[in-house]
Amino acid sequence: MAGGLVALLDDVAVLAKAAAASIDDIGAAAGKASVKAAGVVVDDTAVTPRYVHGFTPDRELPIIRKIAVGSIRNKLLIILPVAMILSQFLPQALPYLLIAGGLFLCYEGAEKVYEALAGGHHDEEVPAAQAGPEFEKSMISGAIRTDLILSAEIMVISLSSVEDEPFLTRLGVLIVVALLITALVYGVVALIVKMDDVGLSLARRQASISRRVGRGLVAAMPKVMSVLTTVGIAAMLWVGGHILIINVGEAGFHWPVDRLHDLEHWFGDLAHGGVGGLLSWTSGTVASALVGLALGAVVVLIMHWIPRKKDSASVH
Image 1: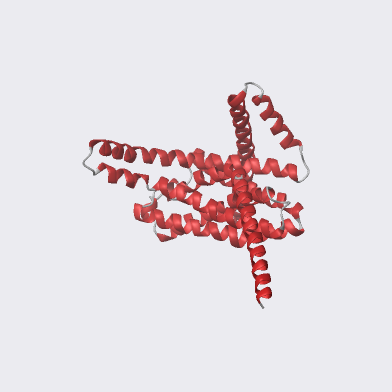
Image 2: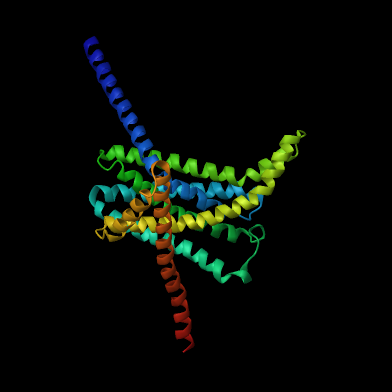
């Protein structure tokens, strides 16, 4: 009896050690995957604040919370099952899904550029604070749709860094990355959009330094939000263009990604050390954004031409 109990305890100890090792492997792999996806995380953080811009302070955090919940659903209920199934049975399909997602991001960014240049929607412009719950709902839906594409890129990049791991390890890594990235992105977004409230609180304090800092924050945040809106649009074009270039290469057409690498190497060789790396990164980013803008503009033209074609047909 005692021997059986000792054997059972030994088995439990072995299982515990195996579980601990598995958890360590998942943690290390998740950290590696998160670092690899860091560029898209930055873009996701820059894109999101524009969906909260203009709402009253009491609606900002609830809106961010709803977008964050939608992001978790995107990652765990849509992207995770699809990514795991495809990685297990049809890995060659992943680049084509990302191409479609990249094209959507390019379209979103180019549409915003078109509206800015054409001065669109002036007749419909109403301050977000006065637009009502339907407008808020549409903004949240738009944010969640955009998040779906960015989250897919984050998850697939993370998956690519652990594609040789066993199925359960890959699953654990993607779950950890989904929760970690969502908390990071929307925690930073919440901090950004509530910074003006922090400034107001500081401005009411007795200490002169606190008041000066508070007034400075209050004055600066509208400009910061405006800059972030522009950065968010640029990020859509950059990430969308980069997704397209890389995944067109993954699908078998290597010319665009080869030219992008040639461009990055050429600029990187102009200087040594960190400056060369910065030039290489900047050239690749600008080239990706221009590709995203060009392809997005084509989609925008098509999407604006189709309704006009239908209206013309209905008149005749």
